[in-house]
Image (tube, rainbow, N blue to C red):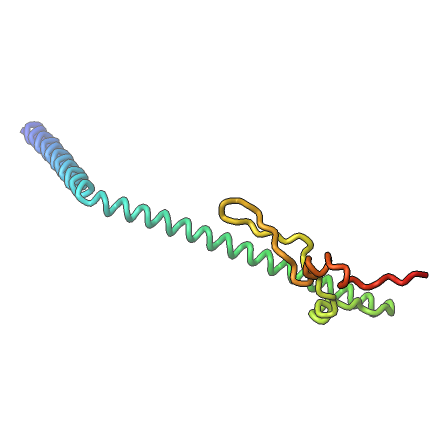
Length: 154
């Protein structure tokens, strides 16, 4: 009799385990079906969100790259400044005068360049039109013999 009770309990336990497994499978199927229906309804929203996430990731990477470049530039500038200060100090120790840097005053000392020799204007149809320079004498005055200064004979 004890073995019959044990067999019945074993059958009931295996039956309940089977029922639990069947219930889990049904619930899993229902969840997957509901999820696929929700994804089908909200596919555009999900695509937009994934595109926004990708864009945010690209922007974040770009910002990080910009920050790295700026940090390298700052380090390079600091290194150059320390090297420049060291060279200046060495020049002072050696008794040399530091070189004068070019400034805006040097730029104003330069003589203004003459106007261009050949002045052209291209029309919209592709034809090139010769423009006159303002500092040239009038062509009629150059042809007139009276306007030219007389050459003294030696």
